[in-house]
Length: 255
Image (cartoon, rainbow, N blue to C red; front, top):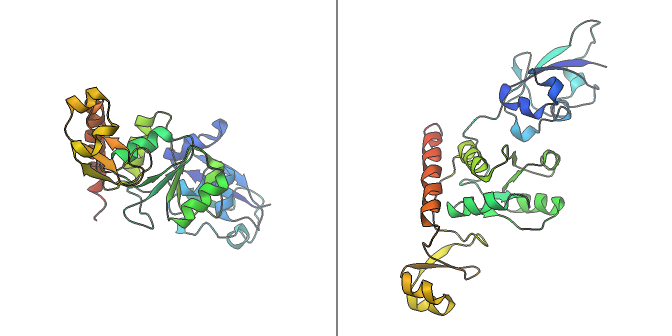
């Protein structure tokens, strides 16, 4: 069986099994395996990988091992496969990007919607349903499930690399640098918000809110009412930080 010396970028070492976190792995592979399969067998989803290079030459992940290692040598790996991290900002098939988050990322979904980023999310959805949803609406699926990202029917996806929603948000914004439109989307359903008068929404407000606030917005989809309330300063800080991250990354996008 041929072997490959796989050199994994340092940014992706966290995906490798702990004994292999040295950046270079010798991986056996069948001639009928693709290079992409070899990479994913190490625990690295192809969604996280840039342009593969074999002995310095760019190759697609669909390349068969047998086509690039036609003769097995008795000593040493047959070829060196370089696995870089995905470049940032990452292009998407649809611009601005539309995202879809798996059921474990509700806090991240609410933050993205606060920033006006088109974000699909349901509290219950099977993996197969998420893949179909992403394909039907050309959405980038964000998940922490590497197995979900390996599904061949998934057109675009990305691994969420952090535990806390705050760090997750910064990483997603840095990776994709989507345009932001804060305070324009509903945190509940992702619908667009429209200005609403005090009179239009008064019947849906608590007495204290009716007395204290005059500016409101209402979701065109589910009808939820919004105003800048007690959490205003915390949310404004989230928005300011997000705008700084995207501005810093957009300088390299050239859009």
